[in-house]
Length: 354
Image 1 (cartoon, rainbow, N blue to C red):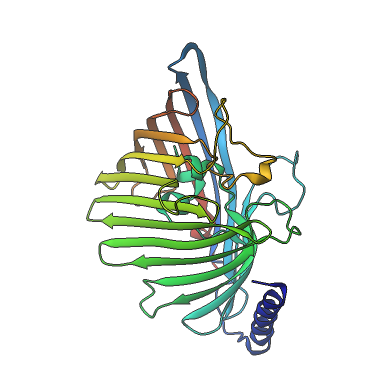
Image 2: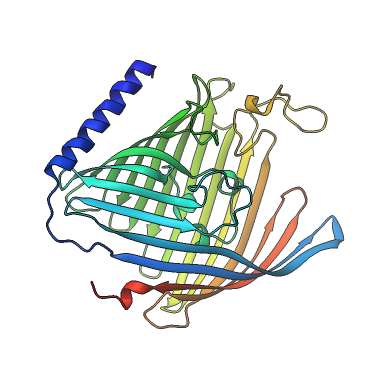
C-alpha cells in the first residue's frame, strides 16, 4: 500500500468519525459499566536439569491492573485498561496502558474504533488476559500485543460472530513515527460447542517487507470440559518454504468437576528454521533488523508442558482464585517450574449504582 492509498484510507476513517460526531445520539446508557481492580501474588520455584545448584525461588507480585469501560452517548463507548508499572524506562504515558480506545456504533452491525488497541492476532493463548496465563509459548512471551491503530468491526445479529479489520502501527518497532504498519483481519466465532479465533496478519518488519501470520485457534466446549488447539504459521517472502519453517502449536485441556475447581493440562511447541545459523547457533545477520522474526527468533526449538489446578473459594464468584501448577520447558536447559499463588479482583460495579 503506497502513501497515496494510506492517506485515502485515513481520510475515509476521519470522515466516518466526523459523521459520527454529527449524528451521535444522546440516549441514556451507563457511563460506567466496568470498574475493576486486579492483582496476582505468586510463589515461584525453578530448578535446572543441567545445574542442580542453580535454583531460583521466592515470592513476587505479577500484575496490578485497573480496567474501566462505559458509554459516552448512545453510540460512543470507551474501553481502558492500565497496568501499573514503575516509571523507570517508560518513554510515554501510554507505555503502561494496555488499551484505551473509543468506539462508535455506525449501525447495530458495524462499529469503528480508534486508539491503543489489542494487536489482533488469532489463538486462545494469545487472547487470554496475561494475569490468567501461568506458563506459555515463546511467541506469547515475546510478542508485543498492544499498539496504536484503528479498526472496523462487523457483528452479526446473533452476536455470536464478529470480524474485525485493523490498521495499526507495526509491532516490529517501538517508535510510532517509524512509518511501519500492520494489516490484521480476525474472526471470533461462537458456535454451539465450537469457538474460533482465526486471523490473517501482514506485519511490516522493514519498509516494504512483510511477515505473514496465519493463526487458527479452535476451542471445543462441552458441559464441564473444554480444550483448545492453536496453530500458527509465520512466513516472509525471504523463506524457502511458506509453511512449516516458522510455527507454533499450543494445546490445552480443562475440566471443572464442580463450580469451584478447574483442573488443566497444557503444552506447546515453537520452532523457527528460517535463517542460516553460525557455529554458535546464532542467525547470520548484519544487524537485528535483518531478523525475519523477532518474536520467535531463528534457531528456536522450544517446548513446554505442565499441569495445574485453580480453586475459587467464593461460591458463584471468580473474584478470588488460588492456583498451583508444575511445568517443564527447555529454555536453554530443561527447567522445572513450580508455582502457587493468589489472584484477587475487586469489581466495584457490584457496589456502585449509577
